[in-house]
Image 1 (cartoon, helix red, strand yellow):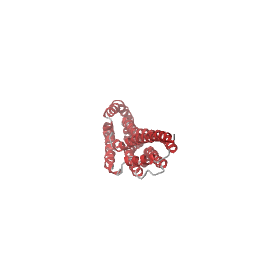
Image 2 (cartoon, rainbow, N blue to C red):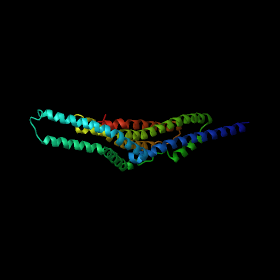
Image 3 (cartoon, rainbow, N blue to C red):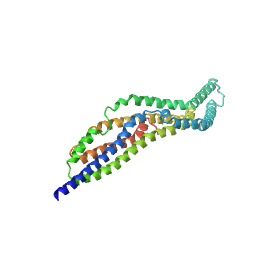
Image 4 (cartoon, rainbow, N blue to C red):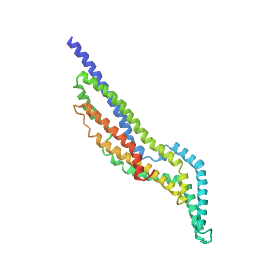
Length: 288
């Protein structure tokens, strides 16, 4: 009878060990995949990220937003001319150079609107080059290695049945948590690119404000926001680099639960810092 009970216990134990390993293998694969692709995704320019979406945004910006920017620019130029005339006592103190200055400023404003899409893409090209040059920052692998899992399996085989069952339930909970973390990483990385597309679609309007000293703050803040969005990718890469170092310091010890929750804790920390990169980049660039 004891032999039969022992065999049943061993069979259940083997099932639990296999279940725990399946949970952890799939769990780490989803997170490893998302984290491993971050460096490539954030270094991609908007034009290369999704050419179809980029073409759509450019078409909408040039056909719909640019005419609105032209109207705004007309209003600003007329306001600038009226203000300039009033400053010179209704032309009583006439200086011809001021008209040349006004024409030159208007010409520059028109050129900015005409080439605003090229200017915004130049910002992200520079940011992409910086991010690409920083690719060597991640000197460690961001993956939970196969050696860790192999060590973990050896430890599981030495555990008793009931602690093993409790571990199985916890790994199931961890699997759900890590799946949510992988979704959050996906949302952050792709959400940044969607935000870039939305920002660039309205580029002509803030660029139209550069023709007036008072209103140019709108354009300057917009430009700072673009730079912040571009270099947010650099901060994301730094976060991944820190995560890569931390995750390799985790060792699978006899206290398996502590080791697993340590990995989860580092992943939660990664997601939290990724969420902070946007506000941090805007703070550095003084954009709001």
